[in-house]
Length: 155
Image (cartoon, rainbow, N blue to C red; front, side, top):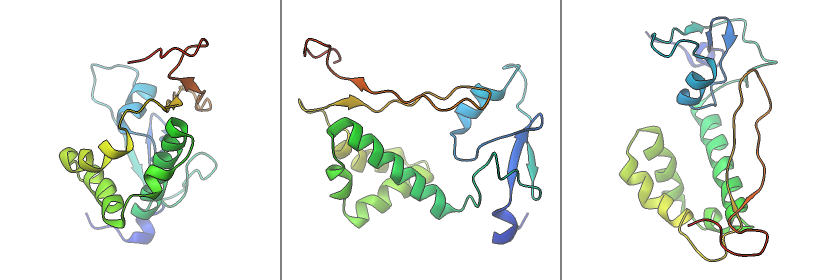
């Protein structure tokens, strides 16, 4: 089925009349909304009446890439206290990071990502985000690599 860009930008899914946020991972959406895990998950694709108060508008590839890179920068800041590792990526590496993820080529993704997540003694926090059901806000608390006494508590 061919869909124009204009129509695609207003497309949205629901499950049992509950709009699904396109920018959440599909596995997370399944965990949040599927009621019977043994059954096929039925989704409805809509091309009109986008509930703009519940869903971000215009899910273009560029929008998704921008959101992804924003999350990568946020994770870098939480880990290191700055975003130098992300900002020091070449244009080629940034493109490879997104393109390989979007096309399920994990080994190519890992080539770039390993530079962002390499372990050092100066790691500050674990980038952790918890998604809850029923349109609750995302939980994102600071989780330290170290105990209150300053000892490394992880790894």
